[in-house]
Image (cartoon, rainbow, N blue to C red):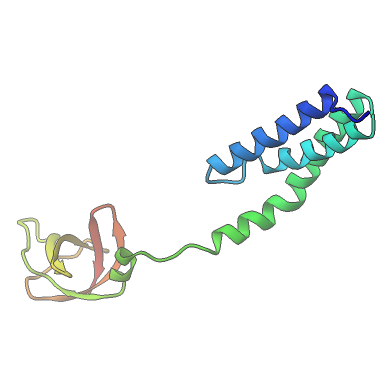
Length: 144
């Protein structure tokens, strides 16, 4: 008669738990252990001793982690997309209101007023056209 042994139930539960944990996180955290649990389940189905099942679980998990993590992380990193805010970088803007220290000023881009500061700490003049080099928090860093 075909029945499911308690070891097999344990490995099936482990596969489910690791898979759900992976789905709930944004990074590759536990998928390796789900693969190891699958190997442990196969060992349990072949009536291997519990120590063999556990050894296979850890060995397969470690091999999967070492062999595939780098490849998987690289493929996820290449999927980054620029946001609208990143499109500001490289634009030329006109300095509007210069503050008393002559280093900080404002400029309007797409109907949004931004605080700006020169990248080298030099003075900004009202009406001067500058180029946005980077975004530092809520301030644009510009060059002349």
